[in-house]
Length: 418
Image (cartoon, one colour):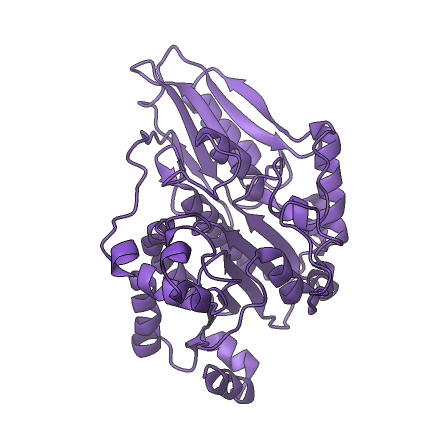
């Protein structure tokens, strides 16, 4: 273990330049504002903003004469609910003052569609929000050895912050199978597929994952549902496969509509920043992240950083609106040969956990499906076979959420950790 993991320093994003054209300054969920820096783009360069169009499945680009004009568009169009709809992000591109091509991914707070605005009425009924962070291919052991800052944050919350709440650590959670599909079906659909009728990982599953059994139930109680992942929907893996919405020989508009229809049937209201994953993976020269590169970055920033930031914007925004939500994010950072990429998540995840602990009406589950199932860890050790099915489950219950759950449920959570 020490040879494979402990003494290894993970790769970073220093191989890419990081040019910040615009930022969201001191995010205010009531009136978010962007500020753009006028010294990044050349004065002779136009500034273009790319917005994803889910109807046709590609980015569409708008051209502006200056950074100031682009900033006005962001503040008066993208950050205002009733104007231009976006998916929680935009690309901003220009030529720098030293004639380099600059491309920034700017994460934006969620905006509401027309039907959502009419449905967002304040209520006196407190509701528990549910937030799930799903870490693909991470055993409980690998979580502990790769994410020490996050573990330390858990301990500090329990010792110094929470009074009635707690971070629960479930020690003996058993994985179902050494791949994601069956785990998602169990998590969302409440059942496992027939093990006597196996199918290859390279085939379409016999039926779609039944997300609607969970998400549809939450929607009937007025919840907004968000499903995010870091996989590209235009390739073979991820949600597009799990929903059997994969038709690679069709046009992008047809394929996009196929995914949208499957998502609606599954109870998913929005996929938002999920769509940015195709651009990020393309920038790294891969279609999926299973066999490299050592770090997945865009504009000098790790891919997971963008997704965690959007989750924070999403939670802050819907908490402000007093509309309950169910949010789900799957990170595949550790689904690769070395098992080292997970270390890159530690600092950001520790900060993210601190944020989540302060979201008083939100229960957060951090869980995994299985341990690492290929690479040197598997070929060199027998321990890998034990870890493969010894999965991670942490539950973050802030003080207010603990009060809403009640003493009996908190006692059950406490006991069932062991």
